[in-house]
Image 1 (cartoon, helix red, strand yellow):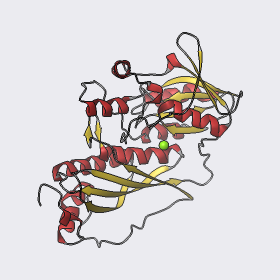
Image 2 (cartoon, protein in one colour; image 1 turned 180 degrees about the horizontal axis):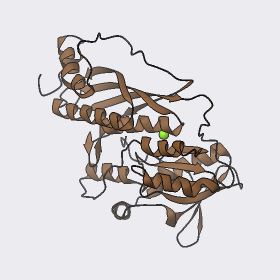
Image 3 (spheres, protein in one colour; image 1 turned 90 degrees about the vertical axis):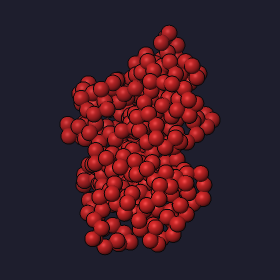
Image 4 (cartoon, protein in one colour; image 1 turned 60 degrees about the vertical axis):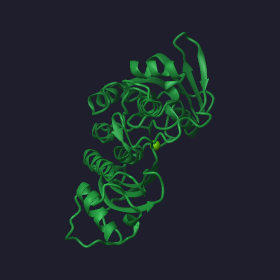
Length: 331
Ligand code: MG
């Protein structure tokens, strides 16, 4: 096969077949003797969670990850946040002419590896080729299984007296992507990771998270403000308790950024009952990607939909959702 994607790879003919065999078949291990059907037929459950996402991140490969790993993590984590067990993933690829086949193969291999880690199966996909400058976009759909009678976390589920936990350091993905794009040397690496192990441990221990959300675009402040609004509660967090690596702290100082509004791709915020908070924190810390987890605040009655930050010097600051565009093409 050629080493660059050509328009002919989108023809639906022989070259498309070669692309599917050589790149995706190799990465995702499909059986060439099995008939190519129009749709995958899969096992179900009492309830299904369904989510979709598109990935346009640039650069395609960055410190700590790549668009393929990101596409699996983003979709898997959204299923987990609704209490579902990730089961099936679809992957649509839009390839721009001139894309390096080596890069595409690397991305596909990374997707396959991340899907194995996350416990999700890539069951169907599609490829289109368009004119362009060698870019790559991925659209996914994720399907998760929900057993009958399970208590599901919800954005509206936070109760007065609950405790807020974050699963690790903030801003790592944002700093890694922005650093790469600006050519700034930074020790930050993307935190893109599937949180299957973390959420699975909480579930296995019988901890019912009242609200659960992955901290992606817009950062922690946006996520908590949205949960406070949906739950009609006041959320209060302590600035000093929010974990941030020295590398991200330095990067924020240099760029004038606030880690509370920076995107991550492998962190979550969990709202749990106060009496379960210490146990939940210990379980998250023992899980993969959770070693820096911390309790950062609590839920109060107060004015509905309010997010307050107690600053390091003892002030009280009201936080809003992210205003403006943030960092384009971060995921
Ligand atoms: Mg999400």
